[in-house]
Image (cartoon, rainbow, N blue to C red; front, side, top):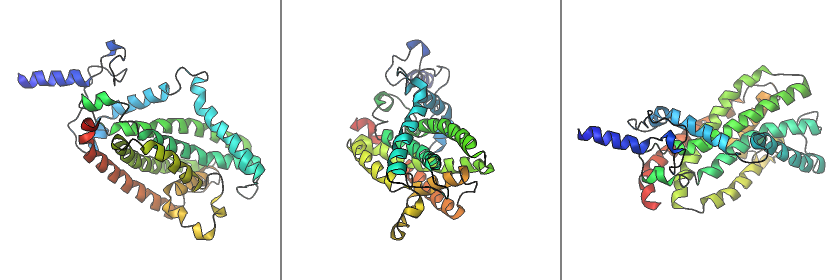
Length: 303
């Protein structure tokens, strides 16, 4: 009897009642009261066990990000186009940076976007992850909730925007070059490595963000430096020979270059480079999850 009452009390605390209209702080609108938050699994298995909550929160985050804004759902497309125009004018027209053999403004724009879109998703995820735990204090303090999925929301939500913009980029490539490379079938492989890398770093930043509130400001500076260390607005061949090693120790450099290979050049990923940054992404994801799992026990006390 006691166990039954405890289960009911826990379910009431864990579940989101649709009749509240989202009034409960930290609630997840749309999550039915007959779907309990499962916590039986330990380690990474908890992510799969609570995948429905994760997908629901990603959907909520993606739809609510631009809710109430003038352009609404158009912002995921307007934002990268604005950066495209700015960087094209600065680096292509003013600094005369060229990609590929043909050069030209149109060619530069295609190469720029194929690198800018994955970087945008990566950068947004890391920028938000340092404060994501602080955004849901009730889930940390009062509710037994699978906390590791919160940083994943910041990882997957920008990926939805990236996928939308990438579909538009593929259409633009088809119109511009009259070609559609079969090598785009490799995109999921590259995206998986990107997700693993981003998730691992996001778990670390989400945890550190609870204890060190300056992390979000430090990340703004670090991401700016990281972007220019990645061949996004310039081709990798422009990097001086003594700095070519950066392409191997910077996983985002390999990811960006492989996106361009499969989308624009009709080539498969650079397999040695792919193996290198994917292995690093797996290690980062494992270590990041373990770090988050060990430090989450003190979140409630600190907050």
